Amino acid sequence: MIVIFYVLAFLVSFSIVYLLIPPLGRLAFRLDFVDKPRQDVERKIHREPIPLTASYAIFIGFFITYLLFTHEFSLETLALFIGGVLLLTIGTIDDWYKTKGKDFPALPKFIVQIAAAILVFLSGNAFTGFINPFSGDYISLPVILQFVLTILWIFGVTTVINFSDGMDGLAGGLTAISAITLFVVALAKGQSTSAIMAITLVGVTIAYLRYNKAPAKIFMGDAGATFLGYILAVIALDGAFKQATVLSLFIPILALGLPIFDNLFVITKRFLQGKSIYQADATQVHYRLLKAGLNQKQVVAVLYLISICLSLSSIILLLIEI
Image (cartoon, rainbow, N blue to C red; front, side):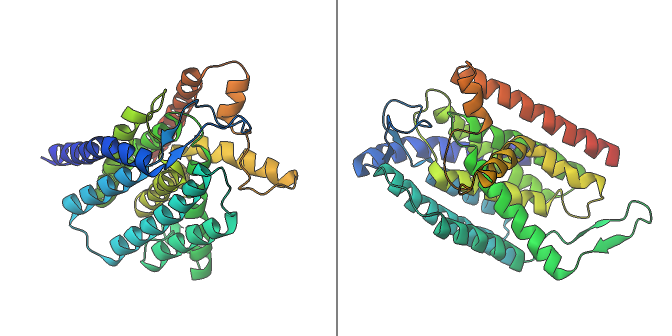
Protein backbone atom coordinates (compact mmCIF):
# COMPACT_ATOMS: atom_id res chain seq x y z
CA MET A 1 0.00 0.00 0.00
CA ILE A 2 2.83 2.41 0.87
CA VAL A 3 4.58 1.59 -2.42
CA ILE A 4 1.41 2.43 -4.38
CA PHE A 5 1.17 5.74 -2.48
CA TYR A 6 4.64 6.81 -3.67
CA VAL A 7 4.06 5.49 -7.19
CA LEU A 8 0.87 7.58 -7.40
CA ALA A 9 2.72 10.68 -6.18
CA PHE A 10 5.32 10.13 -8.89
CA LEU A 11 2.68 9.62 -11.59
CA VAL A 12 0.64 12.67 -10.58
CA SER A 13 3.65 15.01 -10.49
CA PHE A 14 4.96 13.58 -13.77
CA SER A 15 1.58 13.93 -15.50
CA ILE A 16 1.01 17.54 -14.41
CA VAL A 17 4.39 18.70 -15.73
CA TYR A 18 4.18 16.56 -18.86
CA LEU A 19 0.79 18.04 -19.78
CA LEU A 20 1.57 21.65 -18.84
CA ILE A 21 4.87 22.07 -20.69
CA PRO A 22 3.52 22.11 -24.31
CA PRO A 23 0.94 24.91 -23.79
CA LEU A 24 3.42 26.89 -21.70
CA GLY A 25 5.96 26.51 -24.49
CA ARG A 26 3.49 27.90 -27.03
CA LEU A 27 2.72 30.78 -24.67
CA ALA A 28 6.44 31.55 -24.42
CA PHE A 29 6.69 32.05 -28.18
CA ARG A 30 3.69 34.39 -28.14
CA LEU A 31 5.27 36.45 -25.36
CA ASP A 32 8.76 36.25 -26.88
CA PHE A 33 9.92 34.67 -23.62
CA VAL A 34 12.54 32.51 -25.32
CA ASP A 35 16.26 31.92 -24.99
CA LYS A 36 17.77 33.12 -28.26
CA PRO A 37 21.08 31.78 -29.60
CA ARG A 38 23.91 34.31 -29.41
CA GLN A 39 27.12 33.95 -31.37
CA ASP A 40 29.01 36.14 -28.89
CA VAL A 41 28.28 33.88 -25.90
CA GLU A 42 30.41 30.76 -25.64
CA ARG A 43 27.91 29.02 -23.36
CA LYS A 44 25.02 29.24 -25.85
CA ILE A 45 25.08 25.82 -27.50
CA HIS A 46 21.58 25.76 -29.04
CA ARG A 47 20.98 27.22 -32.50
CA GLU A 48 17.29 28.22 -32.34
CA PRO A 49 15.00 30.01 -29.85
CA ILE A 50 13.91 27.81 -26.92
CA PRO A 51 10.95 28.59 -24.59
CA LEU A 52 11.88 29.43 -20.98
CA THR A 53 8.61 28.43 -19.32
CA ALA A 54 9.21 24.91 -17.93
CA SER A 55 9.81 26.39 -14.45
CA TYR A 56 6.09 27.17 -14.00
CA ALA A 57 5.06 23.61 -14.87
CA ILE A 58 7.67 22.28 -12.42
CA PHE A 59 6.49 24.63 -9.66
CA ILE A 60 2.80 23.84 -10.16
CA GLY A 61 3.39 20.11 -10.50
CA PHE A 62 5.51 19.95 -7.36
CA PHE A 63 3.21 21.87 -5.02
CA ILE A 64 -0.08 20.39 -6.22
CA THR A 65 1.28 16.87 -5.74
CA TYR A 66 2.97 17.66 -2.44
CA LEU A 67 -0.18 19.16 -0.92
CA LEU A 68 -2.41 16.48 -2.38
CA PHE A 69 -0.42 13.62 -0.88
CA THR A 70 0.74 15.10 2.43
CA HIS A 71 -2.14 17.46 3.40
CA GLU A 72 0.64 19.51 5.02
CA PHE A 73 -0.70 23.02 5.58
CA SER A 74 1.90 23.88 8.22
CA LEU A 75 4.19 26.85 8.76
CA GLU A 76 7.00 24.89 7.10
CA THR A 77 4.87 24.33 4.00
CA LEU A 78 3.92 28.02 3.86
CA ALA A 79 7.57 29.05 4.15
CA LEU A 80 8.55 26.55 1.45
CA PHE A 81 5.83 27.87 -0.86
CA ILE A 82 6.63 31.57 -0.31
CA GLY A 83 10.34 30.87 -0.77
CA GLY A 84 9.55 29.03 -4.00
CA VAL A 85 7.44 31.93 -5.25
CA LEU A 86 10.25 34.38 -4.46
CA LEU A 87 12.78 32.30 -6.37
CA LEU A 88 10.40 31.82 -9.28
CA THR A 89 9.75 35.57 -9.44
CA ILE A 90 13.37 36.74 -9.32
CA GLY A 91 14.35 33.92 -11.68
CA THR A 92 11.68 35.00 -14.15
CA ILE A 93 12.98 38.58 -14.07
CA ASP A 94 16.52 37.29 -14.64
CA ASP A 95 15.34 35.07 -17.51
CA TRP A 96 13.40 37.98 -19.05
CA TYR A 97 16.56 40.08 -19.07
CA LYS A 98 18.37 37.24 -20.84
CA THR A 99 15.71 37.12 -23.57
CA LYS A 100 16.65 40.74 -24.30
CA GLY A 101 20.36 39.97 -24.38
CA LYS A 102 20.96 41.72 -21.04
CA ASP A 103 22.36 40.60 -17.69
CA PHE A 104 20.31 41.05 -14.52
CA PRO A 105 22.33 42.29 -11.49
CA ALA A 106 23.53 39.58 -9.11
CA LEU A 107 22.66 41.40 -5.87
CA PRO A 108 18.84 41.13 -6.09
CA LYS A 109 19.16 37.40 -6.85
CA PHE A 110 21.48 36.95 -3.89
CA ILE A 111 19.12 38.80 -1.54
CA VAL A 112 16.08 36.80 -2.65
CA GLN A 113 17.89 33.46 -2.36
CA ILE A 114 19.03 34.34 1.16
CA ALA A 115 15.50 35.49 2.05
CA ALA A 116 14.03 32.18 0.83
CA ALA A 117 16.57 30.30 2.96
CA ILE A 118 15.78 32.44 6.02
CA LEU A 119 12.07 31.67 5.63
CA VAL A 120 12.82 27.95 5.79
CA PHE A 121 14.94 28.44 8.92
CA LEU A 122 12.29 30.57 10.64
CA SER A 123 9.65 27.92 9.92
CA GLY A 124 11.64 25.47 12.03
CA ASN A 125 13.30 23.42 9.29
CA ALA A 126 17.00 23.73 10.11
CA PHE A 127 20.25 21.90 10.67
CA THR A 128 20.23 21.79 14.45
CA GLY A 129 23.06 19.40 15.32
CA PHE A 130 24.25 15.81 15.16
CA ILE A 131 24.63 12.67 17.23
CA ASN A 132 27.94 12.14 19.01
CA PRO A 133 29.30 8.84 17.60
CA PHE A 134 31.07 8.01 20.88
CA SER A 135 28.40 8.76 23.49
CA GLY A 136 25.26 8.53 21.37
CA ASP A 137 24.14 11.89 22.77
CA TYR A 138 22.63 14.52 20.50
CA ILE A 139 24.82 17.62 20.23
CA SER A 140 22.65 20.67 19.65
CA LEU A 141 24.47 23.54 17.97
CA PRO A 142 24.16 27.19 19.09
CA VAL A 143 21.26 28.93 17.36
CA ILE A 144 23.55 31.32 15.47
CA LEU A 145 25.50 28.35 14.07
CA GLN A 146 22.25 26.58 13.18
CA PHE A 147 21.20 29.70 11.29
CA VAL A 148 24.51 30.12 9.41
CA LEU A 149 24.81 26.45 8.41
CA THR A 150 21.17 26.23 7.32
CA ILE A 151 21.39 29.37 5.19
CA LEU A 152 24.72 28.31 3.67
CA TRP A 153 23.34 24.88 2.79
CA ILE A 154 20.15 26.14 1.13
CA PHE A 155 21.87 29.01 -0.67
CA GLY A 156 24.74 26.75 -1.73
CA VAL A 157 22.62 23.95 -3.18
CA THR A 158 20.28 26.46 -4.88
CA THR A 159 23.29 28.11 -6.50
CA VAL A 160 25.15 24.96 -7.63
CA ILE A 161 22.10 23.44 -9.32
CA ASN A 162 21.55 26.73 -11.13
CA PHE A 163 25.21 26.84 -12.20
CA SER A 164 24.90 23.26 -13.50
CA ASP A 165 22.08 24.17 -15.87
CA GLY A 166 24.24 24.68 -18.94
CA MET A 167 23.47 21.74 -21.20
CA ASP A 168 20.37 19.91 -22.41
CA GLY A 169 19.19 17.40 -19.82
CA LEU A 170 22.00 18.06 -17.34
CA ALA A 171 20.57 19.97 -14.36
CA GLY A 172 17.25 18.13 -14.56
CA GLY A 173 18.99 14.75 -14.70
CA LEU A 174 21.38 15.51 -11.84
CA THR A 175 18.44 16.72 -9.76
CA ALA A 176 16.48 13.53 -10.49
CA ILE A 177 19.44 11.32 -9.48
CA SER A 178 19.93 13.28 -6.25
CA ALA A 179 16.20 13.23 -5.50
CA ILE A 180 16.03 9.44 -5.98
CA THR A 181 18.92 9.09 -3.53
CA LEU A 182 17.23 11.33 -0.95
CA PHE A 183 14.01 9.35 -1.46
CA VAL A 184 15.85 6.12 -0.56
CA VAL A 185 17.37 7.83 2.48
CA ALA A 186 13.98 9.13 3.63
CA LEU A 187 12.40 5.68 3.24
CA ALA A 188 15.21 4.06 5.22
CA LYS A 189 14.75 6.60 8.02
CA GLY A 190 10.96 6.36 8.00
CA GLN A 191 10.53 10.01 7.02
CA SER A 192 7.34 9.97 4.95
CA THR A 193 7.10 13.73 4.29
CA SER A 194 10.66 13.91 2.97
CA ALA A 195 10.02 10.81 0.88
CA ILE A 196 6.94 12.39 -0.72
CA MET A 197 8.87 15.59 -1.44
CA ALA A 198 11.69 13.60 -3.01
CA ILE A 199 9.56 11.30 -5.18
CA THR A 200 7.49 14.30 -6.29
CA LEU A 201 10.68 16.05 -7.33
CA VAL A 202 11.71 12.94 -9.26
CA GLY A 203 8.37 13.02 -11.08
CA VAL A 204 8.55 16.67 -12.12
CA THR A 205 12.19 16.46 -13.24
CA ILE A 206 11.74 13.30 -15.31
CA ALA A 207 8.68 14.83 -17.02
CA TYR A 208 10.77 17.94 -17.72
CA LEU A 209 13.59 15.79 -19.12
CA ARG A 210 11.14 14.37 -21.65
CA TYR A 211 11.22 17.82 -23.30
CA ASN A 212 14.69 18.96 -22.23
CA LYS A 213 16.84 16.06 -23.42
CA ALA A 214 19.04 16.93 -26.40
CA PRO A 215 17.94 18.58 -28.59
CA ALA A 216 15.90 20.48 -25.97
CA LYS A 217 12.42 21.73 -26.81
CA ILE A 218 12.13 23.81 -23.61
CA PHE A 219 14.30 25.28 -20.84
CA MET A 220 13.46 25.95 -17.19
CA GLY A 221 15.81 28.97 -16.98
CA ASP A 222 17.19 30.38 -13.73
CA ALA A 223 13.65 30.32 -12.29
CA GLY A 224 13.39 26.55 -12.58
CA ALA A 225 17.00 25.65 -11.75
CA THR A 226 17.07 27.69 -8.53
CA PHE A 227 13.70 26.23 -7.53
CA LEU A 228 14.96 22.66 -8.02
CA GLY A 229 18.09 23.40 -5.99
CA TYR A 230 16.01 25.00 -3.25
CA ILE A 231 13.70 21.98 -2.96
CA LEU A 232 16.63 19.54 -2.94
CA ALA A 233 18.26 21.48 -0.10
CA VAL A 234 15.02 21.52 1.93
CA ILE A 235 14.47 17.78 1.40
CA ALA A 236 17.94 17.09 2.81
CA LEU A 237 17.28 19.36 5.80
CA ASP A 238 13.93 17.76 6.48
CA GLY A 239 15.29 14.23 6.03
CA ALA A 240 18.94 13.23 5.74
CA PHE A 241 20.26 15.91 8.12
CA LYS A 242 17.73 15.19 10.88
CA GLN A 243 19.22 13.30 13.83
CA ALA A 244 22.31 12.70 11.71
CA THR A 245 25.54 11.19 12.98
CA VAL A 246 28.89 12.63 11.94
CA LEU A 247 29.23 9.96 9.23
CA SER A 248 25.72 10.38 7.82
CA LEU A 249 26.25 14.14 7.41
CA PHE A 250 28.09 13.17 4.23
CA ILE A 251 25.07 11.34 2.77
CA PRO A 252 23.29 14.40 1.30
CA ILE A 253 26.63 15.97 0.36
CA LEU A 254 27.53 12.90 -1.71
CA ALA A 255 24.00 12.68 -3.11
CA LEU A 256 24.54 16.18 -4.52
CA GLY A 257 28.25 15.59 -4.98
CA LEU A 258 28.82 16.37 -8.65
CA PRO A 259 27.25 19.86 -8.78
CA ILE A 260 28.66 20.70 -5.33
CA PHE A 261 32.28 19.70 -6.04
CA ASP A 262 32.32 21.04 -9.60
CA ASN A 263 30.92 24.42 -8.62
CA LEU A 264 33.16 24.73 -5.55
CA PHE A 265 36.03 24.43 -8.05
CA VAL A 266 34.43 27.01 -10.37
CA ILE A 267 33.63 29.48 -7.57
CA THR A 268 37.15 29.18 -6.12
CA LYS A 269 38.66 29.77 -9.55
CA ARG A 270 36.49 32.84 -10.15
CA PHE A 271 37.33 34.20 -6.71
CA LEU A 272 41.07 33.76 -7.26
CA GLN A 273 40.75 35.50 -10.62
CA GLY A 274 38.90 38.39 -9.01
CA LYS A 275 35.64 37.66 -10.83
CA SER A 276 32.12 37.68 -9.43
CA ILE A 277 30.98 34.17 -8.48
CA TYR A 278 27.81 34.92 -10.48
CA GLN A 279 29.75 35.85 -13.61
CA ALA A 280 28.70 33.26 -16.16
CA ASP A 281 31.51 31.57 -18.08
CA ALA A 282 32.42 28.20 -19.55
CA THR A 283 34.49 26.76 -16.69
CA GLN A 284 32.02 24.13 -15.44
CA VAL A 285 32.96 20.51 -16.03
CA HIS A 286 30.34 20.05 -18.78
CA TYR A 287 31.91 22.83 -20.85
CA ARG A 288 35.40 21.46 -20.22
CA LEU A 289 34.33 18.00 -21.40
CA LEU A 290 32.73 19.57 -24.46
CA LYS A 291 36.00 21.32 -25.28
CA ALA A 292 37.82 18.01 -24.80
CA GLY A 293 35.93 16.61 -27.78
CA LEU A 294 32.84 14.90 -26.36
CA ASN A 295 29.46 15.75 -27.82
CA GLN A 296 26.53 16.93 -25.70
CA LYS A 297 24.96 13.51 -25.21
CA GLN A 298 28.32 11.96 -24.25
CA VAL A 299 29.02 14.73 -21.73
CA VAL A 300 25.63 14.32 -20.08
CA ALA A 301 26.02 10.51 -19.99
CA VAL A 302 29.46 10.77 -18.33
CA LEU A 303 28.19 13.23 -15.72
CA TYR A 304 25.11 11.12 -15.03
CA LEU A 305 27.40 8.14 -14.42
CA ILE A 306 29.61 10.10 -12.01
CA SER A 307 26.54 11.40 -10.17
CA ILE A 308 25.09 7.88 -9.90
CA CYS A 309 28.41 6.61 -8.46
CA LEU A 310 28.42 9.38 -5.85
CA SER A 311 24.78 8.67 -5.02
CA LEU A 312 25.52 4.96 -4.59
CA SER A 313 28.36 5.94 -2.27
CA SER A 314 25.91 7.93 -0.15
CA ILE A 315 23.56 4.93 0.01
CA ILE A 316 26.48 2.73 1.12
CA LEU A 317 27.09 5.21 3.94
CA LEU A 318 23.42 4.95 4.81
CA LEU A 319 23.64 1.16 4.97
CA ILE A 320 26.69 1.40 7.23
CA GLU A 321 24.70 3.69 9.51
CA ILE A 322 21.76 1.29 9.63
